[in-house]
Length: 385
Ligand SMILES: Cc1cc2nc3c(=O)[nH]c(=O)nc-3n(C[C@H](O)[C@H](O)[C@H](O)COP(=O)(O)OP(=O)(O)OC[C@H]3O[C@@H](n4cnc5c(N)ncnc54)[C@H](O)[C@@H]3O)c2cc1C
Image (cartoon, rainbow, N blue to C red; front, side, top):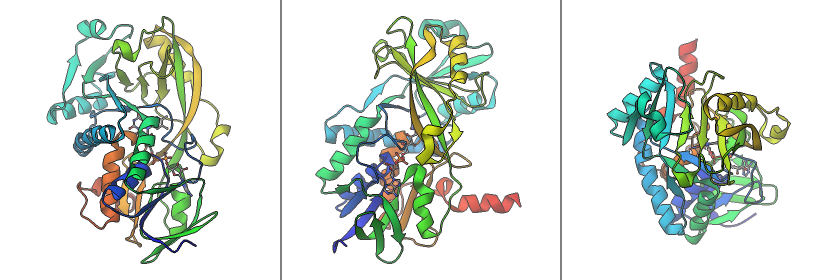
């Protein structure tokens, strides 16, 4: 057992845990970041080269958090000396009279997010090689772009270490014993800290089970598919092709999204925003669900070969309302939880890290965290009775 008592132990070195650890170390908190796998790894939710960053949200609270998140990403870029963001804009297409499209359009206007509505007659002039479906409207969030995810994760961990933080990887947490000083046991050692932050992604409930808490989380495996451009460069980042979200595609129940070709030259990433429920340790046994995206590509992206060239796996950990969990443990107030990022949490990494750091230090959080409370699940259960 290590005799040193840390100010904080963060469990899970995905983007949320790494950003939390970085904020804690910046505030001179003696911090240990524990990770079950040897870093870097591709078994959780934060691996892969790219993620979409955007302000286009229906909810004002997400837009407010994103305002700060952009600033904090830029600060991390400066501190780490690496490029983490490319601005491309985000094209949103969806049934023009549909609720989702209208809510988003109104939210962008209300929050004065720089954006442009594209009328049908001008669409192909701005966005060539995409068929806008009949009845669909289109708008562009011009603040949006691509975050370089693997690089961002490495940057957060590097800056954390530069501030004196300690990372121990290959150390799976097998027990968390609450108390004024929390005892965290891994397969090979025992550590103690005045507070603990649990950011274990798809394994959140496994780690929380040691504290008697279970959250309504659902883990799904998502197929990350790359599609070959018939003419290389048609949808490339260097030609300023934007990221996109297709709301309510007629092929499927959930949205489809894509990012311009970049990390694998000549291949564009287009994915279905849902997958099959899985145990995170068994994810590679799940059947693939790529044919939905293939049918959509055949209809709307004539410049792509409608068979995936590359398929990678990733996990979403969803809550029933798709809002995150950012809260203290209901019984043990020095245990803080960041979970349920529901397939859209990466872009918030630095601001989530800031808020979890504030909770771990017993400070008043910078944002109203009621949309992210654990209590909301209990309130919902009661109202459903
Ligand atoms: C295909 C895909 C596309 C996405 N696209 C976007 C996007 O465009 N924009 C966006 O904003 N977000 C996106 N997301 C969501 C985003 O990537 C996730 O919300 C985010 O990465 C979640 O990070 P996390 O730190 O909570 O989880 P993880 O990255 O899974 O980190 C949790 C870590 O905890 C570790 N751990 C678990 N149990 C233990 C234990 N017992 N002991 C020690 N360590 C443990 C795990 O090994 C893991 O490293 C996407 C996700 C996927 C899968």
